[in-house]
Length: 396
Image 1: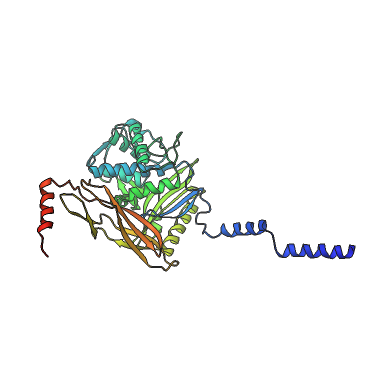
Image 2 (image 1 turned 90 degrees about the vertical axis):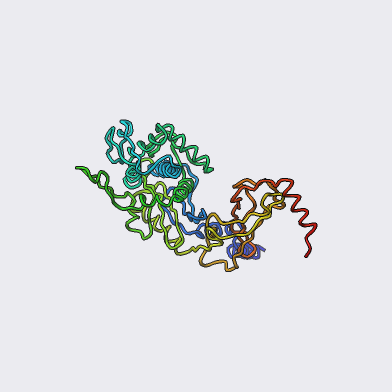
């Protein structure tokens, strides 16, 4: 009896070893899942890889962690400067006077003297290429009257962009209390800045001069070495403090693809640049873009009930594209215009009329809001009367 019991226990043990329980299998599955996504930025505390046109996030790591952004802060400073230029509040040849406070900034600087004047064009070079803390404050004071007022503008813009991980306390990224951002938010701000295409004239230049015609010209060398050593790189901004470590928001373009890579908290510049380059390589090798409509294409017509105009022609005000993996789902991409039913006048310019919905097979892969390109007032009684009588007396 004892012998038979020993045999039964032995067989039971062998069966258990041959067919592991659910806990073991689940653990193995978990390990496998952890390796399904390529680790592109192993040394970064936080990272994001984004397609600039569509805003599609291809890779992220701790992307919403709130961290000190160092001089990457200046991306928002440049954004507000470019927006002031677009609105006509600034001109590139406007002279910007340096206050004593602006000149007193430490860290990276272009060594502005109190009372020295430079053009907006020169200040942008100093901010984008040399990461000038002094130039950033001088520009902020020129736009808003004080750095404090400019910082309020920065945080208002953060709110407008719907960002939840960011609060600025200064315009240059020097260490300060309650000054933080995330890789995700920096990528979104970078994308917004890149809508101003002329900014890469500053962020993508490797070297230039300030005070070129003076007795002591100042040689500028871009702190972002990728603009020289990575094909297609043309921005955007480096950052470093002992607290933030080495940070970078970079962009590069190949063909019709533009990538944005953000890394925060890297241990050194070599690792930072290598990991950003690796992210760029991954996107350009693995993804392609399919354009649904080009800017200016007629997308369709929308009937407007009781409007002065019977219909609105929908013309693409931008390029509508989707990001696709080069290898993967081979189902055909198609699109539909899904418009609001019974659209009635009055219609305001910018009013949402429906969506452009893009499918791959039966799966929705992208939705774009379609807004009215013009205002349509309600038709008067005489116009409606003529339309009604025309229908009554029309003979086919």
